Structure formats: structure tokens, C-alpha cells
Image (cartoon, rainbow, N blue to C red; front, side, top):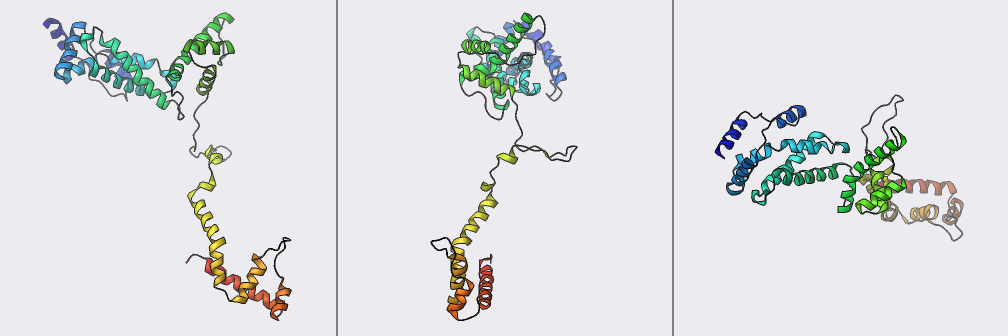
Length: 312
């Protein structure tokens, strides 16, 4: 055992320094040059980590399996997420696997870690594939991660049957039934998931850009927003309600009795037949003045009320 571990130490001494994921090609190249561990070496380092929390041993277990994460992450490139991000999430899963790995269970770390790597990548994809979550139950998650590969299989079979390439993307009724039966989900769930795959995210408020015709970018926020719930609009509506109710009553109380009666008759009174109150001539006859004088009193009263209703 000592000879094997000595050789492993010598390999690690010349192992490449891992670059950041910002330079993906260099990172992949360095990961592929990391020395692989024999079963004896893996057991040795795993026990060092389990029994003594030796960080160097854990590091060697992680570094020797980075290529596994890269290969696994490559399988999920079809979801439109950056390869580097998928690798990074897979690395998190790998570290979780190393932390929990028990060398006495009789399994290689590569087999144990694969589950953790995929689980972490799956969780990342589900959180970031769409703003609106597409898979919330166990069955839907299974459908999410198998529908794409099954569609490719159907497309390949159709191409062989037609003797060439096929451009058909949508599942037919028979294929939908096959997917539902194979994955033990409802037919409606297959149809809905396929529709979500086919659709894309739309920016609620796109970045304003000038087109050739000078039009601004138009997004859903322009027609989905409820302007009545906008804070400023609500404050203005509340202020209008106050002025039309308590505000008017308070302003009327500041007028002399004659001016108040004129305003009420001319602006606030509605008879049973839907008509207003007294006319200028009716009020002129009541008070023994001209209709023009009633109009002047009305104008002065309105100006006074307007001043009283303005914010102080």
C-alpha cells in the first residue's frame, strides 16, 4: 500500500493548479489531467477524512472526481444554462457526496457521488430554467428530466421511418400516451410540460431600445399593470374622495347662509325628477336681487371654497 500511496503523492505533486471556471476550457483541461485514485488510495483518503476530518484527503477525493462532474454537467446543456454554472453546482454535489461517503459500504465514490452531483444540478435547473416553476412534484420532476430525451428518441425513430431527417418537434397523440404511460403521469401533464418547454421567458419590463422606426420596446408590463393600484394614484383617489365628501362639507360651513344656500341649490341639489335646484332667477326673486347679483355671489362663494379645499 505504501508504494501505491507514494506514487499517488508523486502524481499529486505535479497535478495542475485548477483555474477558475471563468476560463472554462482551461478548467476542463486541468480537471482531465488530475490523477485518478485506485481503490486502495480512495479507501485510504476516505477513511482519513471520515476518521480524522483530514481536509487534504477530502480535497484529493474531490479533485480526482472533477472530470465526473464535467461529464455529467455536459448532459444538461440542452436546458440553455451556462456549462460553467452547471459544473459549479455539480461540484457542490460532489463535495456533499465526499462529506457523507462511507468507504466501508463497499461502493466506489464515483457511483455514490453521481447521485449527489445529478441531484444538485437538477435542483439548479429547476430553479433557473423558467421564472415560473415548471416541476413541483416528484412525478413532474421525472417528466421534466426525461421528456427531452424521449422526444429525441421519437424524432430519431420518425427520421428512420421516413428515410431521412424530420423537422417535426411536437409530440403526436400516440407519443404523448407513450410518455404518460412510461413515466406514470397524466396525459395532460405531458402536454403542459411540452408546451412549457416550447415557450420562452418574456421580460416583464424589457430594456428600452430604439428600433429603426423609433418605437420603444413594448413589454407585458405595459398592459398587465394595474394603474389604479399605483401608490400615487391611490393617494390621489383618496384625496379626491375626501374633497368630494368631508372637504366640501367643511368648505360649505365656512360660507355665509345665503352663499351656502345658493351653492347648494345651484350645484348640490338633485330633485326627484333628476333636475337641479333653483335657477338664478328663482333665487333672485327669493332674495329680492337681480339674477346677475346671484351669479356674482355664486362665483365669489366658489372661489372661497376652492381656496379652502387647496392643501394648506
